[in-house]
Amino acid sequence: MKKLSRRSFSGIAAKGILGTTLLSNMPLAKAFTTKSMNKKLGIALVGLGSYSEHQLAPSLLETEHCYLAGIVTGTKEKEGIWKEKYNLSKKNIYNYDNFDIIAKNDDIDIVYVALPNSMHVDFCIRAAKAGKHVICEKPMAVSVEECDAIINACKENNVKLGVGYRMQSDPYTNEVKKYVKEKTFGDVLFVSSDAGYVSNGNPYQWRLNKSLSGGGALMNMGVYAIQTSIYGTGQNPISVSAQEFSTRPDYFKDTDETITAQFKFANGAVAHMMTSHNANGNRLKCHCSNGWFELDPAHSYGPISGRTSNGDTIEFPFKRQQALQMDDFAKHVLLDTKNIAPGEMGKRDMIIVEAIYKSIAEGGKEQALSLGDLGIVS
Image (cartoon, rainbow, N blue to C red; front, side, top):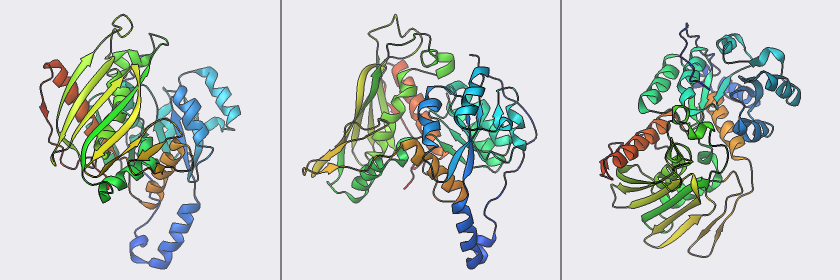
């Protein structure tokens, strides 16, 4: 699969769902709110790979504020299969070449880009120019520069932008955030996080092709470990140092296999993360001044499991994280609620990814980070 080139065309302003009367006329505002809450936004999935097939599409059968309205695929055979399975209208089925005419389709409100990482920037920008709100699967792009391009395109075309960080909508994640904010177990001193799996599949898969993925384990599972390190401390790191290990160079010829990294935070806390395509890891543990809490597993599709030093278990009813995630974004579009995974969060994580790769290239040298509150959503 080749990276598709950007298309240039006139942007179309996104349709406003809530007018200025929301601020000036309370009874009318309530009417608009009720109407908006009853509306379901149409989502078009761009890229019908495993994630769309097994996670996003089934989750859209469980969402309250959005639904699967269309698809964009480069595989002709999939068009008929998906059309029949999800009862899609023929006019809502696109390929990569005619994608831009989606601008004329009022059935589509949101475009969810779930393509290989190097294709995110092209399709996110094209979706924004078509006047569609954008969800970009993580990682947001393969460089900070591309993240900026996506953010700017969405701002220029007055559309909303979210990153596919499903864990930000997960109740276990929000419980961890609450513990940290309320200092339930005191100050967080040390965070340990692992995110990895053993890749034994096709050595030619796109995730092992740097031109498509932008990197290896770090660009895939590593984003989870970066995220848990941040919400496990409640702040952005001020520096990072990192190391890379390879035990199967014959298989991981083009991308990183295993990476470890250490973060420092302004309040004195430290964190250690491990990510790998050749070792299993799925855990977050926060050591605090008055105890500890952990999630293990921490970022599976579910169910998650958690426990604390006082003997309690962290337990919530299971619901698909992707359904929660897409509903949260739909509510953000409909009601201007908080965007819990904005583009700035994706950009921040890519800044950290680039710093980790730079540290490795410089023999593990510590890299200073000046992130402030970028990407922190409270």
